[in-house]
Each structure stands twice: as C-alpha cells, then as structure tokens.
Amino acid sequence: MSSQFPEARPRRLRRSPELRGLFQETEFTLNDLVLPIFVEEEIDDFVPITSMPGVLRIPESKLAGEIERYARAGIKSVMTFGVSHHLDASGSDTWNERGLVSRMSAICKDAVPEMIVMSDTCFCEYTDHGHCGVMQGAEVDNDRTLVNLGKQAVAAARAGADVIAPSAAMDGQVQAIRRALDEAGFSHIPIMAYSTKFASALYGPFREAGGSALKGDRKSYQMNPMNRREAVRESLLDEQEGADALMVKPAGAYLDIIRDIREASRLPVAAYQVSGEYAMIKFGAQAGAIDEGRIVRETLGSIKRAGADLIFTYFAMDLALAGI
Ligand code: PBG
Ligand code: ZN
Image 1 (cartoon, helix red, strand yellow):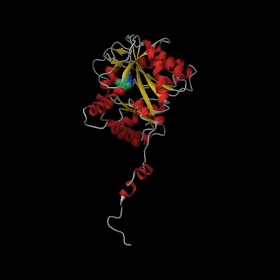
Image 2 (cartoon, rainbow, N blue to C red):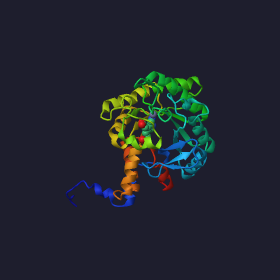
Image 3 (cartoon, rainbow, N blue to C red):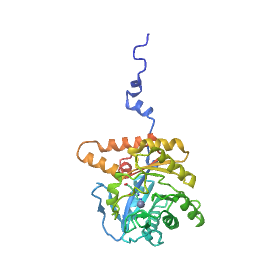
Image 4 (cartoon, rainbow, N blue to C red):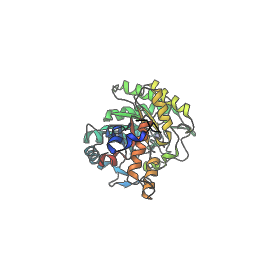
C-alpha cells in the first residue's frame, strides 16, 4: 500500500466527538474559576446592572444566602467588591473593622467556611473622588496609599478573607501588604496580585456596577495597553515583592501577555475576564449574533490555553449551573 498525498492528515483525530475529546489539549473546570460579586450595603433588594445583563448587586442582607447558593452549584471561590454608602477622601471604611470590606468576608466565611473568599483590596469604591487611593492635588499619592492598603489587607484577613487581592496599581503595594500582614500575624494569607493591570476601556460596565464616582481616568497608575515589555516587568516586580500569584487584567485582548508572564515566572498566573468582555458577549448574544454558551467556553478555554491557571469571570455561576 503506497501512501497517498497528503501524508499528514490531522483530520484523522477529529472524526468523532470521542476522538476530539481524547486529543483535546486544554480544559477548564470549576476548580479554575473565581466568581466576582458586588455587594451593596443598606439596600433590601437585588439591583440589576444594566450594562452587565444577568449580574445583580447583592444586598448585604442576602449575601449569606447567595454564597450558599453558589456553593451548592459548585462554585469554589468568590472575589468580593463592595458598593459603599460610606465614601470619604481616603476610603477609610475599608480598614474599619466594622466596615463593608470586613463584613463581606465575615458573612461569606460564616455562610460557607470552605468557600475561598478573595478580598479585592482597593479604595475606588470607597472614595468620594473614585480614585484608587489618597489624592495629593491631581495625583494619587502612592506611598500614603500603601499605608492604607496595609491596613485594609489586615482588616480583611482579620475578618476571615482567605486571599488578599490588591488592585490599586500602586508601586510597592505587594511588599507593603506582605509586611503589614506578616506583622499582624497573617503570614499564612496569600497575596493574589493584580500584577499586570491595564488602563482598559473594558472596565466601563464595572464602573456602573460599583457605582464609581470617578471623573477622568486611571492612566497615571494603571498600565498603557500598548506595552508588552512593561507588562512582564510589572508582574516580575510583584513576584520579587512576594506575590503568591500573578494576574493579567483584562484577559481576552491580552492573551500574548498571559503567555509572556506564564513563561517568565513559575508562579500561578490568573487572568480576569472583565466586565466589558462579559458585556460584549452578553449583548452580542442578545442580538442573536453569537452563541453565548459556545463563546463563553471558547474565550475561557483560550485564556487557559494562553497560560492562565485560573480565571476570574462573571460567567462562573452560569457555567456551574450548566454543569460546566
Ligand atoms: C478597581 C477595579 C476595577 C476592576 C476591578 N477592580 C476597575 C478599574 O480599575 O477601574 C475591573 C473589573 C471589571 O471591569 O470587571 N480597582
Ligand atoms: Zn481601584
């Protein structure tokens, strides 16, 4: 039998669903997904977020029930964002032991002790100007913000948070938080650094979700989306400062960066499929242009294929309910 042109026939491994499954290289499970949630104080009912169809602000009074529902569906981890009614110039509610950041972690851990609670560690939802730290004139004061980040991280850890996730994009924030946690007796609490965070237009819907007061932008502290070398540098700096895991945010438009960081570090790499990525898929599907279920799996699979070990996604609960 002589071989026939073409000799290479990759289609041989694609002939049935079983063969395709056997040779599939990338997979994700509920172990890889973190569900970001928005919790508002002093309200009684869920509030739909119009720019993120299907996502609701959770009233604090209903948070425990929601966490139980997520756990029943198979969700292993949540990231808490607060919608605060106590804004001031520095975001001091975040380090108040009876403030919203602390209460969210305490409520989640009380409801489902094995749920991994990541506490987003920033100020923009607690400052009256909407920036991610203390202002000095028109600038965010890096080093004064570091002190406050340390205080917030300790308060969250004290309230039961399992992971501290600083997203303020301040220089030195991982080291400042690591020191503060260690001094307070929390050397066992890991830091999931938002280590490469771009100043992205894809955060638009999140600003509605969090009720952001921001006028202007965050370009003086978040990264220029056009910079690839600097993206790797930022994550390696966080590694040196003691980060336990790195993160790229947003995810889908930054797959090259996820791959670069995967190759530059041995730490776990996370990626955050952000509000704008969610909104584009939801509205595209609502318009009948794309198949939501398939696109969600394709985008998340691609983020894993690029090198992410875990993914923050607002689709986590939909996938859990669908049995992944
Ligand atoms: C703020 C923060 C943002 C997000 C997470 N933490 C927005 C921002 O930087 O303005 C974005 C999340 C999303 O868009 O889903 N520190
Ligand atoms: Zn912020």
